[in-house]
Length: 437
Image 1 (tube, rainbow, N blue to C red):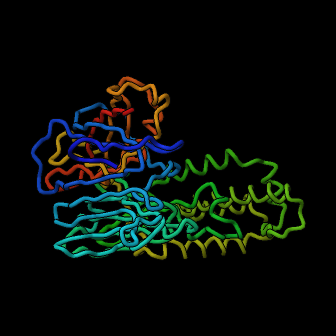
Image 2 (cartoon, one colour):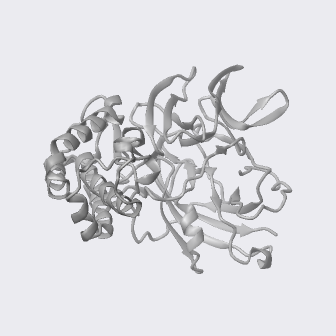
Image 3 (spheres, rainbow, N blue to C red):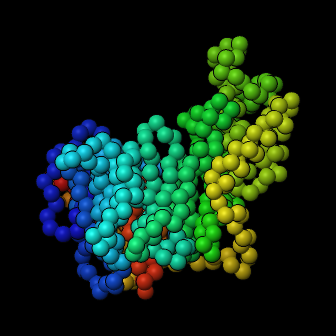
């Protein structure tokens, strides 16, 4: 996926629809601390884009909110993609294809290696991703967080957090999320873990996860070694979800659904088209209700349910929603997080221009630019980024040219974050992206 030294590899042209990867160069290096990792990446199945990176003081117009509807990339998917890094603690993180002898398989593995010892974290899975590497999620130590989908048929993933101290050990596993993404959401140095509670709603009311627009969002954070639900701190995210769903909810379909029995069994005697419209309305009502419920507004959730659900079925569906909610990811937490007092509310975003160690790329991909065959070998695009303390891109802006595809791709990029005085911090980063023939 990227190389830290030497020339970029000779790679074949991508197949139709293939994603471009990115190769890195650092320009104007500074002194670094012992937290700086050594990187080694490769992906011979994809073409490449080179870029050089330097930290600059650039003006930031605004910090984007957490995005849950973006397309997701994985470090290793179906046996394709590799990543390896030796962290300053002496632990090497390795993700790549699972092998049978000398032959790679269409599966992925992950391992932690130190002092000639090897811990096979994921022996075999359809997809393995590194969500966080080197940051402290609130456990008072640098960690690596893998997310793992065992098979393509599995709608949910597991999130495995390991320490990067020797010997590395499993600190926490969270299962049942659709896709996990840790982020310093408010740029205040505290990292939240965002996901959708897929396991709680897949099969709910005989509806598959793919029929919903989204799984209910849940936001978690470690505080004092305890993992708590902090979703109520981000109600604006849920309000946007509610607003979008309401805008797509047809008034006539809602009225027809409210006059139904609410259960809508698959073998219903109703005409197929009518049943289809009723199911669409039912799905949207559920999405609105659990957006209120998961954001800590239980009374608003039940009021919305009473307004939109068939009255004769209210008690049954309320009990079913409550059971799914409590049996989902919340059942794996250590209880509700302590309420945030007004004296602790963040007033400033902490973004650093000068850091001890620059961000190091984990996964940088983009779709092929339009007209790539006609691109000049030495043409380049500059993009200014804000990379948060979890290594996620929080803001991206091209310099000069307007390239929406590049900005959209940057939302999926992941880094080992910058470090200042041994602590992961948000920082500014400028990349020069150079397409190759």
